[in-house]
Image 1 (cartoon, rainbow, N blue to C red):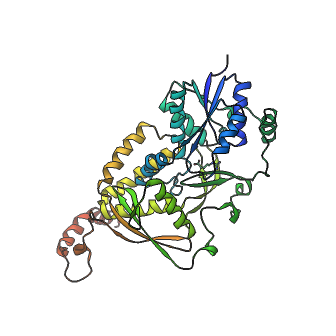
Image 2 (spheres, rainbow, N blue to C red; image 1 turned 60 degrees about the vertical axis):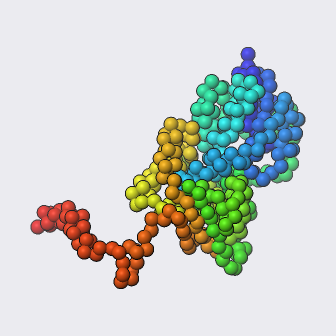
Image 3 (cartoon, rainbow, N blue to C red; image 1 turned 90 degrees about the vertical axis):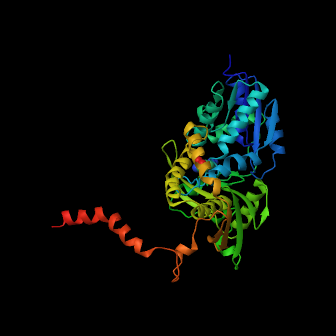
Length: 400
Ligand code: ARG
């Protein structure tokens, strides 16, 4: 008896996930392996990937376009939450995992599989995100993670694959580990493992070096509808096109790079480089529009919710009851977050330079420094007397 009968394997076309196919069959007695490659805008052709899976012994090889769902159901909610892990990383890789898990579970249902599998090792965040998401969506499915157990070195993995007709990588493999999708690129390993070394320019693809950016600033106007970005420069765009175009425009001006040491779920600190131009600008612009349309207390209370939200996405809890409850709060706050934000892009910076909304609660008559304003200046005196009373009394009683 094998560990499972029929398995849906999350597949990227790389050596590791390819080796998973014969490994599952030979070592773990799985009868049929169906691979699933999710197209989330990683910008590479998935046709060859499909063929590769079949050559490696899969009975069927699925390629599913998930770009629209990815942006609408995962990236957009994260933007309404202004979700940044450790205040910096807009979760471009992390957001893809719950969707891939969902696609695996849906395929398992459709093809009558009793297990799903992935090629994650035991040191990363992605195994956590996959395993928890799969269990949340279908607690009866078995989860197989061969690379977490097989204990083979890179060389051993390659030569194991060669025994089953999986070719060794042709080009000298890059020292970096890179994850890419529509929302951004995550780059780690190789020389980046030394946190004091500056990342070499060659690793960046979506963002230009400052020296290569245009010498003139460019303005871009982003329109939001109930917290969701819908237009660029007045044109309504579908979600996938909107993100794609914004990545182009913003990346061209060298904005969107992050270099950080982050805390993984499994306790390891890792040095990560990200480029996520669209997500970073969208979160900045969205937060700005909230400042114009939400009351002070909602804006400030939401900050704490946002931190929790970012953390739970990172930690694999997308399908958790806490996430659902926070979603209800966030959605309620977004009802009036509609309007436009103008961003100035120049030499590696993205600066918000203007905002407007039909729901603005900014009151020019109250705010103006001109002589004729609508604010009752005399009322301030009594307010300050009461507001400052505890501090004043404390001072009187403690400073003798
Ligand atoms: N540290 C990031 C995260 O956990 C990205 C990991 C991406 N994987 C990679 N092979 N570079 O979301």
